[in-house]
Image 1 (cartoon, rainbow, N blue to C red):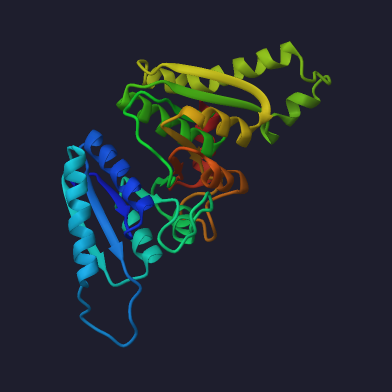
Image 2: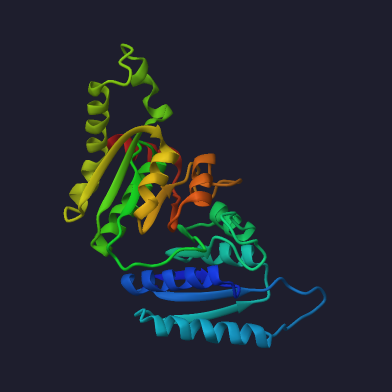
Length: 294
């Protein structure tokens, strides 16, 4: 059996180091191998390229930092004379999780998402975690946050979030927003409006969606948040004190363009905690039938 692998890309930036240490904790908790990757754009008309002293030092220091952090995981190192985005996407095909920092050495400090992080998140073939540059770990006590949506991407994200909360032994905050096209028929039915009755109906609907996941992970403590705020705003607010925010993809992993929609892109850009983007490899028709069956 192939061992589970968590892949993290580094480039010498402080943000990448934070992402690597976050990935090491995840790998140790899952009993997975941590593969630390550095890629350099290939130099034209060269062959049999060898790592430079900078790369050797970078990889050695990365390995040492993981061991000193106390993470209980096997560490492997990989350097490639290849474009970073291409290498990381290729490795994502056999990875359980791919981790990147929100921006690297070529990105100005701030909230802006780097080109490599965005392109990898948009096109990877496995879940991708984007770790902000200002992120500071605080153990396992902080909650996991996820949206409650009756869609394929919502179902994928819920399954992942419940599994994460179970492995961390932490609370799961499940956010149900009224501002979704999913609920337009309900709004137009009898002009119910923003009444207590409507809010109660949304809370009941959230419990129906959550029920099969609760049954699979009965030990997970779930706090359900029902709100009329836009879903992106509600998730960002809930993520203010969270360990991670789990979001789904509108499109499946092999979509010919980006698998992200506008809402997911905003959350990856603006969230104060690591964001895990969960896609799906099966066809949407099959997945839609599975969601309806719940």
